[in-house]
Image (cartoon, rainbow, N blue to C red; front, side):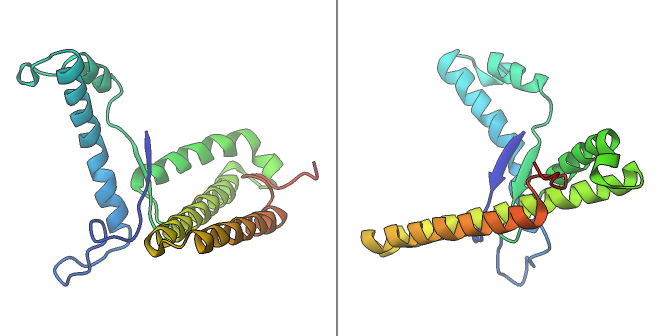
Length: 183
């Protein structure tokens, strides 16, 4: 699995009339390139370190990569959207968690628990994706404005705001996919 976070850029979110911006289109576009990138990196590593000719098939690194199968692309976007592989992962984790602890979650059955748990997972993933995207934009803004003192001040304010938002989130939703037990 590979985790990637993308931002609002022309590469993944073209603003032309010929390529309309569909929901999750940028995330899926990025996700579709990840496996090919790993195959290319394995081929390059075999050529550089194992002196392997790629025309003869995969080398030792490439064969080892093939043993893992398709690389799962866990991608989040600037609008808290997630790739299909990330949705699949959350769904399977929520299935397992629901089967094991549906009573502790306060659900009537595992199916209801899965809905509760996956909602909490997606909320947490989405909020973190948006926060990190904003932090990256703030960082880039500080670099482009090249005002060190102002950038440091923005980082401090951002850190304080993040801590405040984190405390508010924890007090409202608890500390994970399960309700707080008053620990």
